[in-house]
Image 1: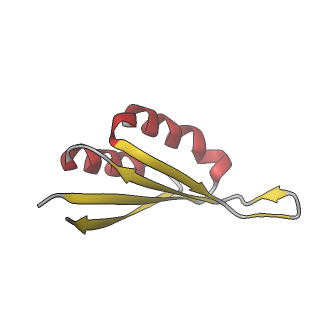
Image 2: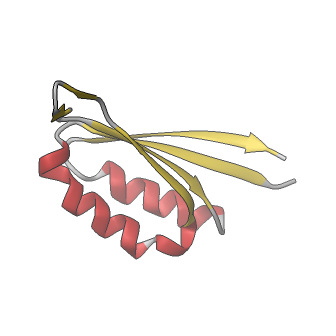
Image 3: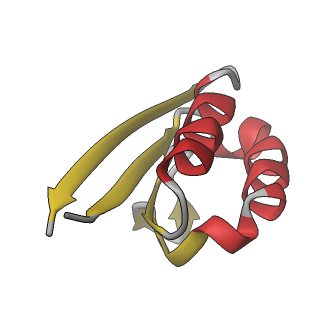
Length: 85
């Protein structure tokens, strides 16, 4: 039975954390199948927070390693969804 893991990555202060988050994404780029970025825009200004959804790919230990690296970054919260197939 395989498992599909989707990570939700919340950035509390996008401007301060985006560069470090992107470094982790680049390091684990082969483990990211789909990436969707969501943030609020109103009145011509962007929200200071953001949410990124990652559909992961590859061996689960490597995906969990990426998850832990992201959780270590200040202002970043990560939650995961696991679907059994």
